[in-house]
Length: 144
Image 1 (cartoon, rainbow, N blue to C red):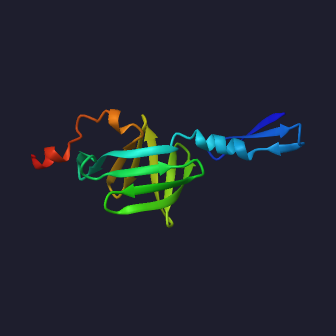
Image 2 (cartoon, rainbow, N blue to C red):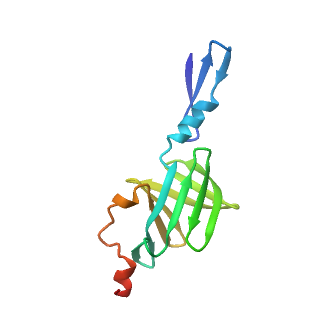
Image 3 (cartoon, rainbow, N blue to C red):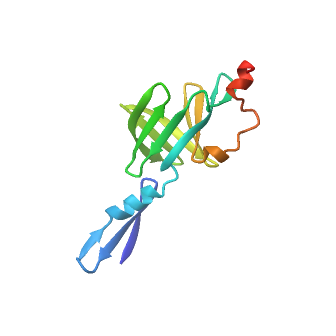
């Protein structure tokens, strides 16, 4: 017997085990989280600030490691790393560190975090990432 109930952003399966006579659900929730698009290793590819879009490579290296257990670690070059929790809310995600939350959204395989008028964009495939035409490198800005 399999039944499904809608819970926070996904399907929660309850599976009855005829061998033990019990209902198993936790593994299904873990499987659902593992398949969440946010889960995986992300690398910052470009940032937006003050009307400019700049590639992060060689300028501001940042990584985001998101796990299926609703935790994540964000590391930024020169600033160390921070651990937090994530939660799916509608078509977006909320990332929380020490009680402070920011929203993140995934569009066309790009995870974007917006805060205070700027944004940081991540990709799971930075080596093959196709940058928008208006993104500059740090060399473009400083003429090196």
